[in-house]
Length: 349
Ligand code: PBG
Ligand code: ZN
Image (cartoon, rainbow, N blue to C red; front, side):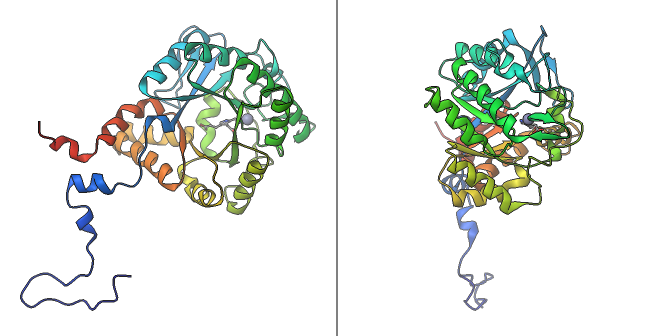
C-alpha cells in the first residue's frame, strides 16, 4: 500500500522520506485515546456464580482463587453487589447434594436450580438472570446427559433438557444457556418454551463448545466427578469448520445468542463466526484461563490487571459482544479506569 515509494534520504536532513508513519496516531495519550477502536464496558461482562446446597459460609475454591461457592441465602447479596459494580447479567451454577443417573433435581420444582433463579430475581429483578442448563453437576457419573450403557443418549437428554428449561422459565430465568452439547438442543428447548408460553425467554447457546482441558478447575468447583471425557458430544479442539457448523446450526434452531468456549485459545473461531452471523456473540473465559492468569500473577510474573484487561479487549476485538468471566466483578473498577483513557491524568482543572 504505502511502500511503493522509493526510500530516500534527504541529504539536508537526518530523516528518511517515509510516506507514512503510524506513530503520528500514537504520539500522545490524547491521540491514542482518540483512535482506540475497541471498548469494553461493565455491561458487556457476565458473572458466573456458584451456589452450593447445604453450606452456611462461603467456601473458597482452591483452584480458582477469589471465587467462592456461596450458600443459598447469600446469593441475593452476591447478585446485588454485582449489580452495584455495574454488571447487568449473572450465570448461575448449582452445586447440589442430590445426584442421580439423570440429574432429575434440575427439573424439580423444589430443586436447586429453581431456588437459585428465584433468589437472584428476587434480589435484583432488573438483573438478566441466565441459568446454565446441563446435568453434569447433578449426575453421579458427571456426564452432561443420560447415560445408557456406555454412552450418553442424545435424545433422552433432550427430553430432560426440555423439562429443565420449562421449570427454569417458570422460576423466572431471563435466558437459558444449554451447555450439554446435545444435537438439536436449541430446537428442542425453543419448542418446549414456546409450547408452554415462554416465548420471551431467550436461548444463549453454548454453540461452539470444545472438549477442552481448560475446564478442570470448574469441575472441581462444581463438584463434578467425571470419569472419562466428553469427546462424543463436545468439539475436538482441532476442528474449526465443525465449530462454525455447530454455531450456524444453532442459529437456524433459533438461538438468540451464540457462545464460543473456551476464550483466548479460540479467538479464530470467534472472529470467523463474527463474519458469518449477525447474532450477538458471547466468549467464555473459562476456569482454566482464570486459574492460569491468577497463578502467574501470584508468582509476580505478570501484572494481573493489565493482562485481564488485555484479554477482555481481545475478546471484543475478535468479535464478542459479551464475555463471561470469573473476573467480571473484579474487572469493573479496572474498566472504569481504562475507559477514562490515558489522557485523563493530564486533565487540568
Ligand atoms: C457444564 C459446564 C462446564 C463449563 C460450563 N458449563 C464444564 C464442562 O463442560 O465440563 C466450564 C466452565 C469453566 O471451565 O469455567 N457443562
Ligand atoms: Zn455439562
